[in-house]
Length: 222
Image (cartoon, rainbow, N blue to C red; front, side, top):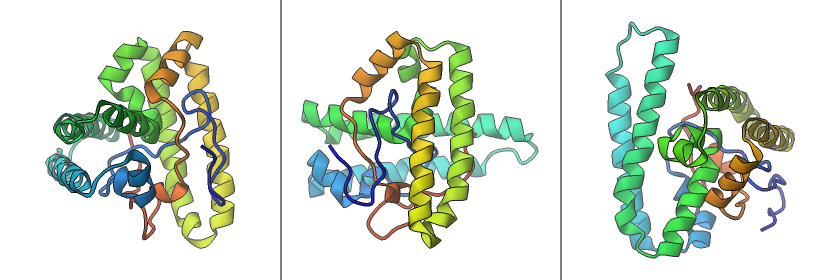
């Protein structure tokens, strides 16, 4: 699938250059109308998936609010990362009942992994399937944090100078693919390609505020 005009050119995710903003966003990535059409998500499914997502998000926000204010920055980062993993697990477990078609369910999961990008490697299921070492996981988490910091800087630019933001977004996408490849072995790269399936060219609008897509709560991610 080729990106539409104005979208960044990307290649095979993980081994290519498909980025994804990591973190827990208030609005789900599947809020985008084009994504729903491409996934053939019905109105009823969308309603149920959205309710499930918002419940998981509410639980996540409550848990964040209960974090000890005396945590060190490193401790808070670790705690937030654990809460994010719990959020993803809750949503995936509770949303499965609304995706009864096996092919659709598989594709939703594939695109979700693509969207999460670096953050997907922190998922215990993904890490186990790829047989990631602790050193690999730590390196990917470091890349994740750098990506989030870069996206925080890019967000305001996207609102004021879209063309310049798209160029930087493309550069980040290329950088991400290179970084992932530098961590994964050739066998792990092949396994990752199989897990995420065909590349989906997410428009950058998915990661920044816009009327037609998701509106991520942009924040540094541990």
